[in-house]
Length: 48
Image 1: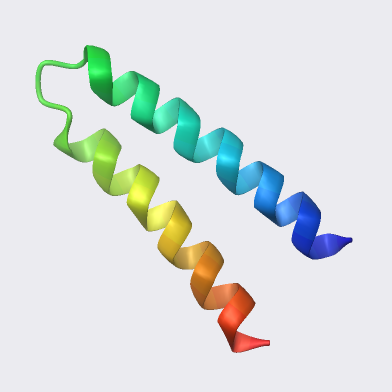
Image 2 (image 1 turned 60 degrees about the vertical axis):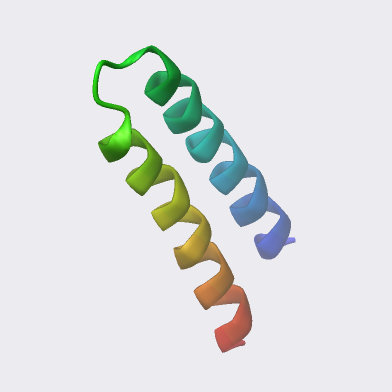
């Protein structure tokens, strides 16, 4: 159950960052945040 909540939270944060990146003049920081959130999620899941 904890993994599912963490997955949904990761999806929401990454989607928001990707959508913000599409409207920014320099989208690189938003894309770094989005991919960083996914990397942290995968690291945490793989660590278990």
